[in-house]
Structure formats: structure tokens, C-alpha cells
Length: 310
Ligand SMILES: [Zn+2]
Image (cartoon, rainbow, N blue to C red; front, side, top):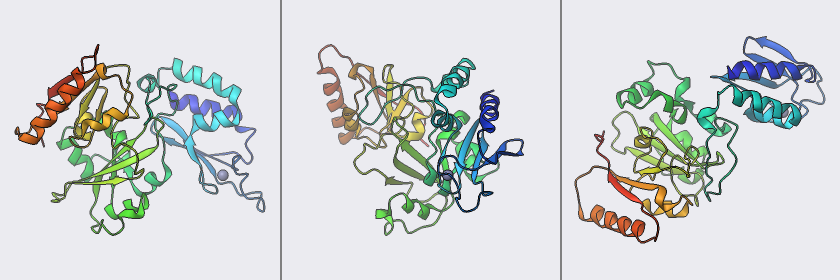
């Protein structure tokens, strides 16, 4: 129903958009009111409203702006936007994302309206899994791993792993292969891209390649979805976290990173992978038991993951 609401509001502002035209059922075109479009050619109209799953998005091929229809409306007509938000929320379409999110510094913020940030560069080099057909190689891979379908919009497919250097060219000499991979982007609470983890799907011996987009940010997956006011499950693997409610992943055993977040310690449960016990892991477990119980009045938890490791 949310698409219907988006289109309804688009129609209500369409007479104020220059050269507005309905191209197809789900595609609309106009002159871009953000950049003003071509000043020389008044007929040029490079702004497009298009459908993405259940929402409408706006993209301009001149200035490159790419945003959710809600964001567009907010800037175009703030009064109408507030009415739109009421209608969207009442519709229940965003119940899933109306919980609190956290930033990397983790100050609590207003519920985010946009379901999903649309980082332009990411979308130009990768395809989001919920847009791919069932017989696609990567869909077969995630289906075999029983990754829940409702998590597909958090995962991407990159046809050529080398393209990822566009996100940080520091890696241009280290990434020398060109195979396709499953891409797992890590966002902070504001939707900023921090890290992309690339999982081999054709049996590569290098199973994971991790690309830091923001080199100072903690590589923690799920900050864009987690609600720090509830119990937070902290696991090692980003893919594992997709199976658990309100879960984040540290991409390894360096759980120390979670100290950088202001999630209350008593809300945290650390879950180690169920791997053979060794001295190093033992030491780590001790360390976190001590750090979690040494805060008076708190009672963090430690558990072991018993899911089969793929
Ligand atoms: Zn524009």
C-alpha cells in the first residue's frame, strides 16, 4: 500500500513539476526541481520517479541525486510531507523500521523514515538481492545457506569483485581477481556505508574480502537496524546475524569494538561461534565475562552459537 500512497502524493504535486509526464504505470518523468535541469534546453527532463519494490524513488540523471520519494517530498513541500508521514505510518508499511536506530557514535535518534539508504555508488556496481531472479547464482547460494528472504534487501551481488575498489582505491593493488561475490554492506545508524564484506560463492580459498570505506569506523554489521534499548545479540558473522532478532556482528572475534558503541552493557549478549575451543578463544571469553560483570549493576551475557557453521 505504501507505493499507492507515494504515487498519490506524487500526483498531488505533479502540476508543480515542470514537464511532468507519466511514462509507464510506475515511471514518471519531469524537469529536476533540485538542480533546475538544463537551462539551455527547456524540454530536457532528466528527473525520474521510479518504483523500487514497494516504494517510489527519485533520481536525476543530470545532478545525480538519488533519494526516496519521502525525502524528495520533504524538501519539496514540508507541510505536505508531514501529512504524508502520518498516512504512511498509519498504513503500517513502515512498522518494521520505525524502531530506533543507532549511529556509529550511537546517540539515539528519531526513527528513520527512509527504509533503506540508496548509496548511489553501491547501486551502480552491485545488485541488491531482492531485485534478482530466483535462478540467479547468488540467490541459489543464499537459499542453500537458508538465509531468510526478508534479509535479501540487506545483501548485494557484485558481478566483478574488482569494481569494489571504486569505494576505496586503496585496495586497487590488493584486489586482483574478477570473480562475482556476495556483498554484505555495513551501514551506521545514519545509513552511511562503513565497510563491505565480500563472500566468495564459487569456493574461492579466500572466503572473505573486507573493504573499509570509512577507515576509522568500527566494522560492525547491523548498526542501521539495531535497537539499543532492547537486548542486542552480538555474533561474529554478519550472515549469522541475519538469523537473529536485533543482532549485530563484529566480523570476527574482536568484540572489543562494541565498547565504542553506547549500547548499555546489560543489553548485550555476546555469542561466540561454536568452534573447537582453543586457548585464544578461551582467553577472549574470560576477558568478556570479566568486562561484562565488572560493571556494577549490569549483567551482560555470554553464550555460544550452536548453529551449524557453513
Ligand atoms: Zn537534478
